[in-house]
Amino acid sequence: MTMPETAAEQATHERPPAPLRTETFREARPTIIGPDTPEPPFPILLSGPVQKGFGRGGKDLGCPTANLPDESLPPMSTVTQTGVYYGWARVSPHNAEGKKVLSDVDSVVLPMVMSLGYNPFYHNQQLTAEIHIMHDFGSDFYGHAMDAIVLGYIRPELDYTSREGLIEDIETDKRVALKSLARPDYESYKNDPHFML
Image: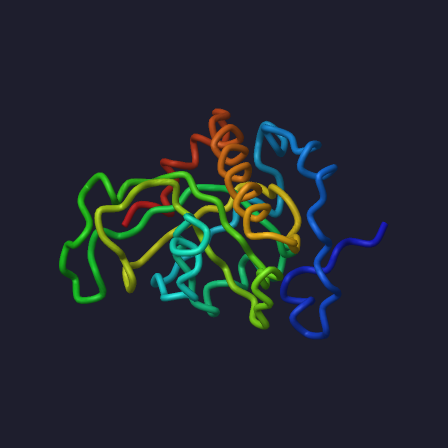
């Protein structure tokens, strides 16, 4: 059986177009995904300062994202394919200058969904890792250190004929992530030493 190319391998040559999302795909989506215990290559640990992205997540899609720098991606991009993933993330309450900016409520370990890919709907040319932390933050946190643990794969990267279809799938991704993370062996990663800043 041929294994799918990793995201890093895809970056070395011209990528085939992402498949279009279909109604059949939407209707067949499970509400919980993955085994009851994370299996290799998970967990995958990521860390880096939050960088400004394209600004589309919050403004265009109602789903603000925190982007990790390129040098943070190899632990993930060398072992996984492009697509949507789930796990936990924590943003440091302190900015790059060491000043506490985020409240204690904003700097706990929180559930997240992550897109690793090229965002075909927007025709990106560069691989990006965009993490949406499922929490309403009191302020932005560009430059803050962020740690994440990726625990599972939700779905492949898809292209869309409409922004509404993309938004609908993002909302489904969030629900699937929350239900999948509620299992005990996934929930236990909230207390992983990776988050002990």
